[in-house]
Image 1: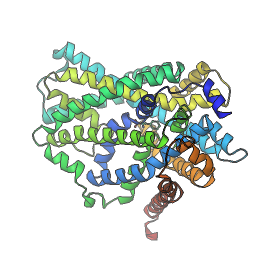
Image 2: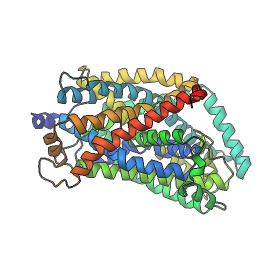
Image 3: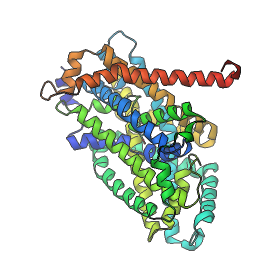
Image 4: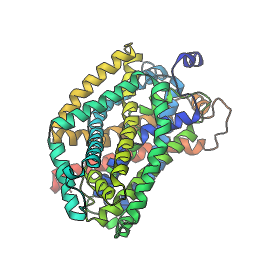
Length: 463
Ligand code: PHE
């Protein structure tokens, strides 16, 4: 029955298409905007090390679990839990994912809009260099210039709102055209090009004078850097790992439902996680040498890359052309992520509530528009939305691994992972151990010390 169902369903056509689409979801502003600034705020190399452990021990098992749930049920997150565990409450995890999708889509599309602003500014500077006043600025002066630009832009109303709506429109437009024609086609071409551009940036950044300090900051774990707030650092590394891999809210349950039965889920998950992590580290390599070379504060916050990148471009021959290409591609990388978030909501609305695809996209886009507008107007709301995935995603991820580890039929699990016996799954005992024990216990433990920490901060006498 599942097979019959799948043949009429839209889906990814090739193995490379699957990986490109899932990697397209994973790779985005989370790697290039969020990862560097969160790492910069949390002590550098020590954060990176903790992050990598979470990707391997928790991230990959959660990702495989999501693919398994999605592909075995061939449905959206809510429908999938309802079908696999009828009459139980598991579908609430799917619903939480849909709610999380609205929140993420709202603030993420706003940040994606900043990318458009920078792209346009690069064009302006290319065409009318005298109007920009940037020629020849270096170091502090240029940093100030860009910071001012950044602040006047993000504090303004109209430009951020317009760019946000433009990004939202494109996202909706692609999702309306469906999985194969829309998502797969764009991801396949654009992701590799982005990587090449990033490598060019890395080359420029590491050859700057004073770059070495940035490399040390990024790669040398210095645990004394995080001793003031180790719990915060660890929880943010966990949240960032989930955010960056697009896991914990059903994005990859939804994409999993479009994967063909013959595809190797473990292999896909490992490839996607590796590609995502590689890009995050490469982004760090592009940013931090320049941050230190130009005396920018690594703990600057969400504006870090938007201050640092333009300074790098200024120090490159033909910098504005590089800038233009880079921001354009960053936009595409953001769109391959926003479409995956919107697809969660749309798959839910079309399959559970039987809306047409067009209606579903329209309805969700209008709701996201309202939330996103609030984000552009209020930096407090933006900050809360931006921080909430750190909790919501690991929370969802906990139930996803517990479901696979303890409740999902082990026969079906083996069948999915082995493509119905066609493939050996020597890793199975390790996988089962990770989803049954390591991942859920780690998440519970980390949340528990997080809560404990909050309590002793509020009532210091208890500590
Ligand atoms: N992983 C995406 C990024 O790193 C963001 C995202 C989060 C996408 C959650 C889907 C779900 O940019």
